[in-house]
Image 1 (cartoon, helix red, strand yellow):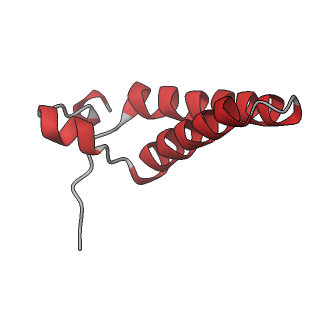
Image 2: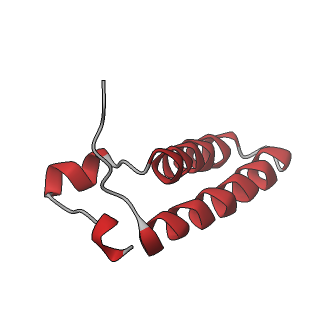
Amino acid sequence: MEVEQNVGGTDRIVRAVLATILAVVAILALRKGKRSAGVLATLGAIGFGINAVTCFCGLNETLGIDTTAEE
């Protein structure tokens, strides 16, 4: 199944940076024993990371947003 890309340019870079930041937050939270914060940050990191790698965002599709034209 082919999915049309709707994340590109600056949007993709921002999502990758957010994924990295959230991954660091998750690690620090889990080390401090804050499981809820760690799990939520992990889920956010995974979500933004998948968006950045696949260049697709379901919310963007639902809202009719396409940032690939920025490239």
